[in-house]
Amino acid sequence: MSETQNYRILALDTSTEACSAAVLTPEAEFVEFDVCPREHNKRILVMAEQVLAQAKLTLADIDFIAYGKGPGSFTGVRIATGIVQGMAFGADKPVVGISSLAAMAHALYREYKTENVISAIDARMNEIYLGAYQTQGLGLTQVLIDEVVCPPQNALNHLDKSINWQAVGTGWQTYHDLLTEQINAQISTDIEFPNALDIAYLALTEFKQGKFTSADKACPSYVRDQVTWQKLPGK
Image (cartoon, rainbow, N blue to C red):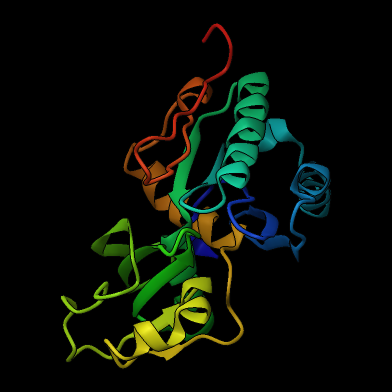
């Protein structure tokens, strides 16, 4: 766990049907994860309390809070962002937002050392949230294709077909035939949603690079431009 140096990170994610919380320390990982659609509001604070208790830490001991900023469910990304804003503002902690698509790509590396990943989340309305990534170490996920929202038709035709791609996310299940006819990618069968642990690892890299904000500047990433976010009142 030397990658964490001396940082202690709390991470939360509610951007998809899954809900998760994690604490990452120099010594250990603590994770609570469940697929519980429409229960995120009830579960996420309990999960946060559980991982802090497992780590024998309080919020005051945490160096910063990370969150899954989306894209994903509009309601889900609002829940995590709002809760993290409240927690970070009250405890005077910085925050780091991480892409849910990048987190899923990182999960494949963390579990299987998979480097080149295409993440796709079902965005409804006959569209997918899409991004392509390369990971070469814990917390070291690089963007190959910027995240977009687009129809599944022709979404992958511009990607390099010579790369040994792996695939992850609900978009691959919903639009399996449309996507697999464009590119030969092995689809993950056991990782389907983002996990707060991967958000913590990616956020550590961002934090060390100075890419963090104050609580009032925490903001979801909807990708769809017409959606807006209201920050903390008066901030």
